[in-house]
Image (cartoon, rainbow, N blue to C red; front, top):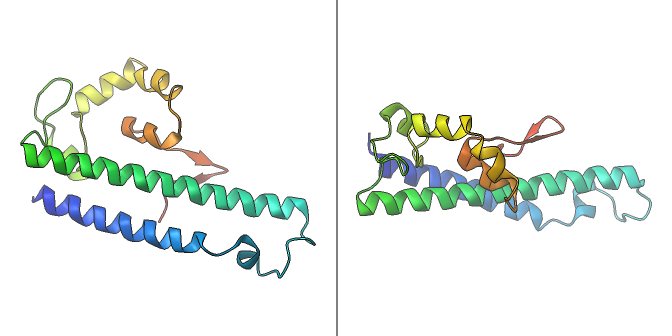
Length: 149
């Protein structure tokens, strides 16, 4: 499997989703609701629309995080350390690399980090939820995944 090609394809896919989402943000909230004025809207309706917009911003943030991870993986590929666990130095399993081409840890070290509770302790110090994806966490709000197409 050509991992560079897979990483570049994933980067292209995420960039397309990100660009589409950014185009959607250029539409004012009033136009999204189909109303000429937001004045006559019930505050609960406005709150729902605002919540959806914030969820979209969080989704965009996760896309940017994923693009950063892919860029880091491409750098590791160019420097010859791609596919090597950053903790133990062993080769990352092929099945893991197929599923997560930007993986930095082998499954054993990822599980150990999870078992140690490192992810939970580090998660408290994150400025945003996107960084927690590095530890295999997903986030849902009101039953919606943040990283959806």
